[in-house]
Structure formats: structure tokens, C-alpha cells
Amino acid sequence: MTVHSATVQHDIHNVIPETASTSSVAAEPKPSPLPQEITTTTTKGIAPLSTITSKIQTRTEKATKPIRAAIVGLGIAGAGFHVPLISSLSELFTLLYVVDSSPPSGITPINARTEGEVTRDDEFSYTREFHDRFGESTRYLKDYEQVLKDEEIELVVIATPTATHYDFARSALLAGKHVLLDKPVTVTYDEARRLGELAKEQSRVLYAFQNRRWDSDYLTLLKTLREGTLGPITDFVSHYDRYRNFLKGTWKEKAVPGGGQFYSLGPHLIDQTLHYFGRPSKVTGFIQNIRSMGDPAVDDDFTVILHYAPTSSNPYVLTATLRGHLLSVREPQQRFVVRGSKGTFSKFGFDVQERQMQVDGREAVTKPDFGVEPEDLWATLEIVGEDGKEVTSQRIESLKGDYQELYRNLANVIRYDEEPEVKWQDAELTIRFGVSVLTFLAFIAISPVF
Image 1 (cartoon, rainbow, N blue to C red):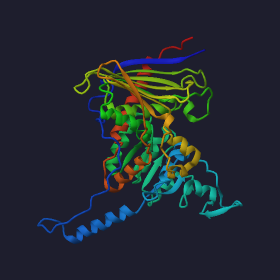
Image 2 (cartoon, rainbow, N blue to C red):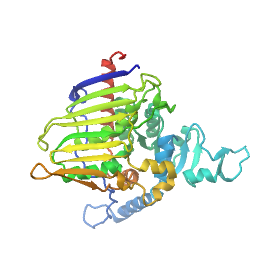
Image 3 (cartoon, rainbow, N blue to C red):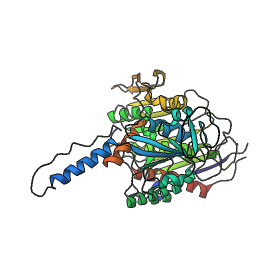
Image 4 (tube, rainbow, N blue to C red):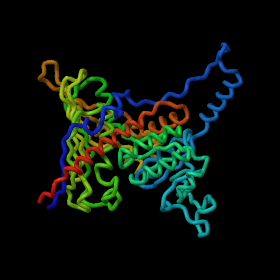
């Protein structure tokens, strides 16, 4: 069996300068506040009441009018995540268009005979199947340029293959649109940086879809860490494993920019780790093709180890291991094992939101059990007693997962200039960190092992 692999260990400061932005230990994600009531006084120097009233009316009109959006790309990300989530928040968003090179089921060209037609536009006839899936006001477009030219569209959600992200996002920003960009945001750090600069120049919101900050397991872990139950952390292990002994035939399994397992799942694990622990001092990486399936240049397995030196708040050396493996025979799969000086947090099984949306589409988000993990997936907390000998074990209830909160925050950022929960600088750092690992691996790539 041929296994193509490469390994790297280096000081991360040589790759990511100290000036690169990173999140400090942030507060637990919470609903973004609505704007305060606007009050006025009749003091010298204050704007005339008529001007203030006009601004209040404009702000109120914006607040009551949903953000008009288009989703570009109807693959797993577009149809499986963004459509259900954006459709569930009708008070905040109106989905006007879905854009893809291939028409989804439920529509036919206007000149063709269509049974069960409900609505039509200049090009297509739509059935109930289409509207049940995408919404009553939604229409399909094949040409992305039509979205850019439509002045009604305020937000463009880009869920296309990673190599197209930069061009699609750049075009949208230049057209005056806000952009929500699926992960990984770009193929290279330079592309992410340039998009960030362009968004500032255009005074538009550029937001990364790092939805797994609102995974049930991650929210539960954050709460446990912030309560200090585990003591100073010494070992953080985060997995996203699957068992797949076949190829699915998607673009992610091809040797294209942005392809491979590390690009697909690595950004989630990297973002969560940097979000809480911040910058590491060193990194070790192993990225390889272990199944000997498909193009040997396309990875299906990765291990990235982040090394953290002792700090004033944590006197211990901390090691964070991020793992993605496609031949893992286990059910449920390991998710987190976090060890501290006082205890261990262990969690198996994935957040349920993705699966719920796969089964029930946009209806899933409206159900009371959306994001609620079953008891058999709750984490286990083991704590050592004061004597340093006796260990007690208990299950802790999972917090409710809430991908909708990302969209709620995005709406408040667009409408009220609220602080984004996922800052673009975080997305830049995540992709810069990931690309630095891949770059060093490319330089040090070793010959196949027989």
C-alpha cells in the first residue's frame, strides 16, 4: 500500500507575525442586543429635532424590513445549511434568489409543459416542491451577474467550491453587497486579506460562516472551561472523524485548490481552538492520504498539534491536537477530550443540527428539538477530589446548539453596526494558520513510503 504523507514542526511566529490579529478569550456566544431606544435632549449643540426624527424613522424602516438575500451554490453548504437557516428567520431575511449552474428540482423552463405549476417568472415555472424547499418569494437564477445587478439584493451568501470564493466575493463587494462567505473563506491568506481590505473600502460587511462556534458540544465545553471546573488546561483534543472506505466523487476529493480533508474540516477545528486559546507558539502537522484512494495528492487524514507555552493564567504547557480521520470505526465518534489539573471533559458524538436539517430541511429549524442533543450524547465530567485520589464522574447536559445565532448576529451587524461574533480578522488568521501548515508541508514533502 502506498501512503503519501508529510510532516512539519516549526515555530508559528516565523510564519504568522505577532501583528496578525487573533481573538482573545471571548465571552460565550449570546444573542446580539437590539439597538437602544434613541433619546433626544434640547441642549445647545444637539442636532435639530427634525433631523433626529428623520434618522429615527430611517433606522426604524431598516429595522422592520428584512435583509434581501441571495444564496450562491446549492450543494451541501448552500442547500443543506444556508437555505434552512436563512428561511427560518423570516423576520430578519428574505431569500429572493438561489443561484446555481444546475436548476434544482421543482422548476422547468417557461416554454415547457409543467404539471403542478404554482408560480412563474420570465424564465421558469415553479412547483410547490420548489417553494416548500426554498420559500414563497424565492426564484432561481443561473447567472450570478443578475444578482450583482439587482439593487434590491443586500446580502450575498457564497457557498460554492472554495477556489471560486475570492472572485465571487470580490464581485459582490464591488457591487455594493454584504457578503457571508462559507469556510474556508479562501484558498490563500492573501486572498482573505485583500477581501478584508476591499470590504472596508466599500463599507460593507464581510462575515465568515464559522457556524461550529454554535455547536452544542462546543458551547457546552466553553461553559465548562469558563467555570474553571477542570482547572488549568494541559491537553485539548478535538476530533472530526468519519468512517468512509469509498470516494463520494465530489470536487473536495480532487487535486484542486481548496480540495482535501484538511481544507474541508480543518478550518472548523482551528477556528474553535484559536477562538478560546488564542495563538500557539509552535505547530506540528501531519497531512496524508491514508486510504490510497483517488489522487494520492489529496489528503484524507490530518493531525495538527498546537503547542502553547505556560502563561500567567495557565502555569502548564498546553498541547492542542486537532484530528480528522476518514477510517475511524466508532459510533458515536470521539469529539472532545480535554484534560486539566482538576478534571477531564470527554464528549462523543457530533452536534445534531446538520443531521436534523438533512432530514427535515428548513422545517427542522422550526421544531422545538432543533439543536437539542439526546442524553446518550451528553459529555462526561470527571473531577478529582481534594485528596488528589478519589475521582467522581457525572454526565452534564448539553447546551442547545444554535446556528441561527450566527445569522441573527449577521443581521444586527448589517442593520445596527453591532460587533460581529466572528470577526473577519479571525477568519484571516484561521486561513493563514492553515495555509502555513500546508506550505511547510509542500516544502518538506517526503517521498512515498512503501
